[in-house]
Length: 233
Picture (cartoon, one colour):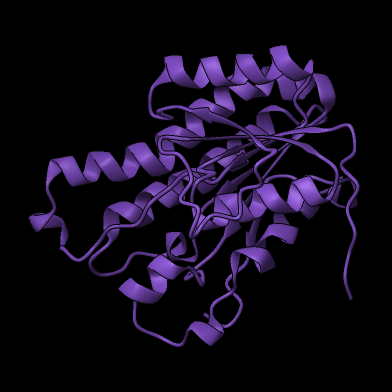
């Protein structure tokens, strides 16, 4: 059963929009009538990106608070409102036990996965309160437990989940905040880098409707949730 969403007149900001998942989410909101503003550190790669040419793109370092504040202000100045924030920026790196993990790697994983979510949410929340809007962030299935080789990544994604619950609690009745928990997503990069059967991995196009649903009236009673989106992975 397919579900059609109607975001006509609503404004959505998507971070990490140059990646496969971020661009897929932008495309889903645009097809549902939303005005989409996309932001990332790098411009989209046309070979992998689903980002529509009509989408307004803001180049920004999302670990830099001044850059994040600028992007949010630019969106609100241009559109007069903000209805949803999708915190999709993130990265994975692993392979070393904790005693062999460099401080630089630890900081990078927390910066890209958690700091970006914190800063974007911090500056979007006042605007989203005005529209009773929604935040959807990307945690991970692996954030639910410890494991070998990618502890800092798991910890950062657990932080995303806990900050999501905190934002939901602090803004009850004013805005909603939820997280999605993927495992392995079927992207060109993951097919090249990871082992496993890609047929078991959900695609960005399959995950995007879940994000749309969490920003829609269909989930108006849902806030503080961590929603699995890992399919058979």
